[in-house]
Length: 428
Image 1 (cartoon, rainbow, N blue to C red):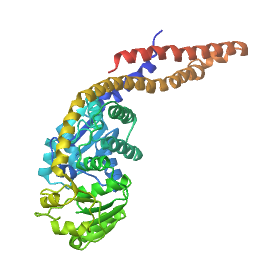
Image 2 (spheres, rainbow, N blue to C red):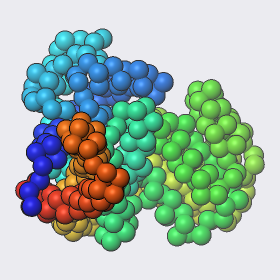
Image 3 (cartoon, helix red, strand yellow):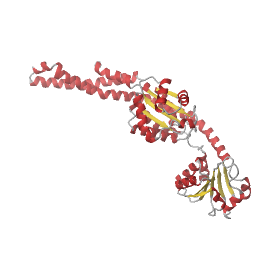
Image 4 (cartoon, rainbow, N blue to C red):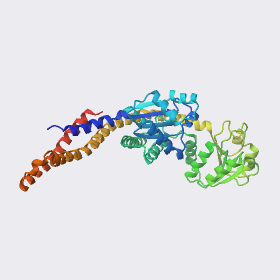
């Protein structure tokens, strides 16, 4: 039995229009660009739908997904057009027309382009964090998932990106479950929290946060997330202290208020840009309010905010940025040893994806076959052999219709099995 030419056309069209080689990823990452440069490619959420829909139409993309993080901007898309430097240039100049020409050229030159199964491997590596600035930071899996959800909500995605993301999330979860790539913290915030956890610091501890910059903001939010509730925030700029204090449901103070603060403390987290010690022996004594129990000071500043004299004369457990950095470096080495294991998982996932893609391609083609067969039957009865059938009596017509119905079922099932076997052997 052979396949009808009309049925074969369906599979040929599928091969031409939905081949995996139509999948591309254009990436701008920390490998080739500074974080500040990458930030210039960020599109505000309220503008994404309009701008991304425009670029999808303008560049004739079938599907599109936009991923933005602090150290990477990536465009995953499906297009039959050849993606080369001119294509990247069109993307940048169309999507970011307000950038200076020299800056546009910088992005074009420093872009990375991935195609087909290599793009799949790249996407899996990104979500598994082996492409991240900090290997093992698992936040990326959430960022990838959210990027797809937003693009899908905008109506920009399709079947290929859906399959890619489904396999990506599945693989990343396996990586974080079966390897130690993310199990030893490396960020200062995470390491400091683990130190506090090991010291069994009570959740109602009186916490003084000195400095309201990015690090202390992250630290405060992290502590609040884990149940700490009692915060006093000090900062040179009072407005910034107010903003962080509001985030933490705490109280805001000017930095100069350290001289008179009389509520006591259990833990100090300090990170300022001061050139001299913020916590002098005199200020520390004022903050201590005569309490003699052991205090904890996490000093993340460079140079440090805590005067060395305090450690000699007071009962204090000092956690310095140098100590945290040493632990971070050791943990990074341990994580690096896990990369080989992660790459094995990714390699298996790439192979699995090819099978998944083949099967999905067959499913898409198979959906059209029953309709096509029914159309052929309808044309035969109502057009090609209409006159001949009109000469048959009712009994002969009924027999013929039963035969055609039987042939229709067989013509759908048997060639379908043959088509599936052929495609699974011949596709990527």
